[in-house]
Image (cartoon, rainbow, N blue to C red; front, top):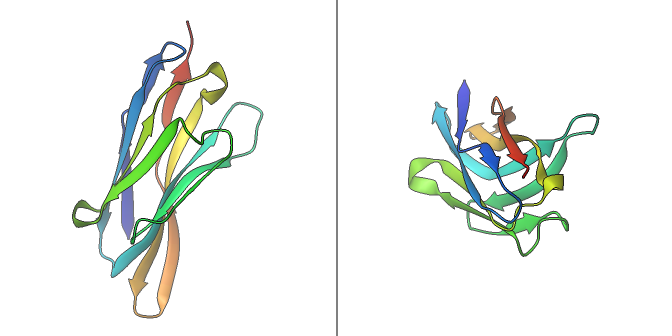
Length: 120
């Protein structure tokens, strides 16, 4: 089994910054893709950003230029640096990992979520 543990959420004023972290642990072969999703009250969960093991990134249009995703493959950890936060960024942020469990077996795992609130 694979566990994803997130940290770094909190309350911040508009225009402020936060950095989220997510560490993967357990037994697996590799983690091809890691990412962040978010879900605001009344909304569906949506993609924020993803990053592959070779560093290829993908961002939602709403966060381009403000958020930066990165990862440390040696630590199996993904980060999300969020700058220029807006009230509409308020949501529960979930870490996601597409994990290669063995040579021919893959599965997707989710973290427990961390609350990000942007408010004055």
